[in-house]
Image (cartoon, rainbow, N blue to C red; front, side, top):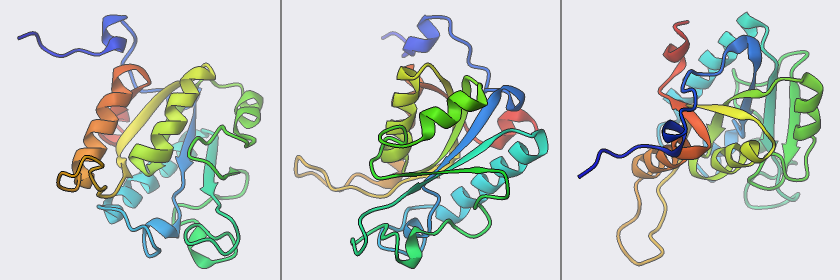
Length: 201
């Protein structure tokens, strides 16, 4: 049996993580809904700490940061923009000079200013983290390829939740969903790294 490989590796693509000097850090949906709201995710304390590490690295290197926030309709069951849980998680919110983009769909490019903001910054590399791995992170990274960007996804700074099996089997554990989503992205859409240690500080 042959050893599995990826389409990017077959093509000889670089697997070097995007350099901070050439990239934009995009943090997706790092909001309270996923901590103490209706959609708590598995492993959030560690994932939020990993997001904070990335933010610190970006700020140290002078890398532009874009914070993406999901907003539902006012009064909606989740991500109600008039309620407390749409707020960014304390410690990983934007500082002065950092960009915030608001979206209503999983893909952070869909119906938002993200493409314009990235074009203005003029960088073609993205470092991506946030929530949920299988949903908005995946949708955004896949779309980023269509927009001409090379992405690096930081596994430790992403998280997801258990999902029901549509075929009637046992629930799909968050850890399995996270791992399989990252494997799919790493095949063609991004280079996946374990954590901020990929840049050696």
